[in-house]
Image (tube, rainbow, N blue to C red; front, top):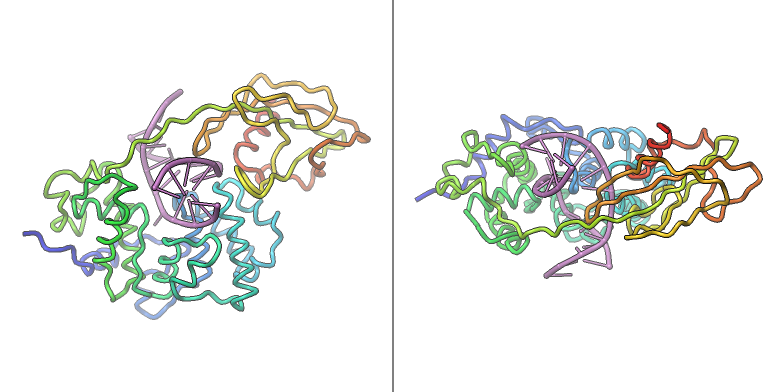
Length: 348
DNA sequence: TACGCGTGGAT
DNA sequence: TATCCAAGCGT
């Protein structure tokens, strides 16, 4: 009979193998009493939602350099924060980040609540993030369940029920292992294990501290777990982006509505995105279409975006959008699909 | 509950 | 090239 996985075995592994990250307090420092900054824990956890560590690092550094505290962030302009988030994706996170910062400033005196239940009431903080902040920042014995933890539990217990159906049982398994000692390090250790050893493909079971306690290892099923419900295939949508440049160099841009795709972000005025979009130029001009289209894939559809360009005189007013003076326009402030359209126009 | 919501890297 | 995938949340 296999023994249950021992949290201490994983903590020992973590003490030797914890990866350094800008938002992380190393286990040795934590043992010396160094506490993580809840603001940095929160910011990193929101950025890491469905996003890789590699993608997050530079954004985290930029945000913490520019807004060192949650109150600094709360006082920032919406447009500045959205621009700083541009390229990271899932832009509702940035809108909720700002909302949350302002709630903390206005209702919590700029101090993070420590308990899971209160954290859950804040914008952009769901079950995972509430547990992560509570455990990592405040060393509360909360169980964090992200994609890594689900995968590790499915393998440890050789659970073949497909996700997302299996989520409740995997959560119970994870809770049953959560220790009272060093819950913050433990939470990060399970996620590190999933990210580096117990990986989706080709898990490195030979290096795993829990190998001898793992049912999937015993049964040879690790690589095929967790099972997942089949995905739908993505349809292709078409659209037209209009890049108007005034003779003084200003660009015609539009702030997208707060809700929906790319909500709150800056973008080029465009047609609707559909099977067969209608021409909808935002200003009267002689439009010239580029030979190449911008291609981009979102979460649930592919987009093929035709790009039309025009040079317009000073005295002509647009039907939609606003001209942004050239010195105020940074392509990096655009979401990626809009930047692709811009890059094509620059190359033309 | 299931779906809408980005992006870039690995395979 | 196509598909999968990454420290989820809101509705």
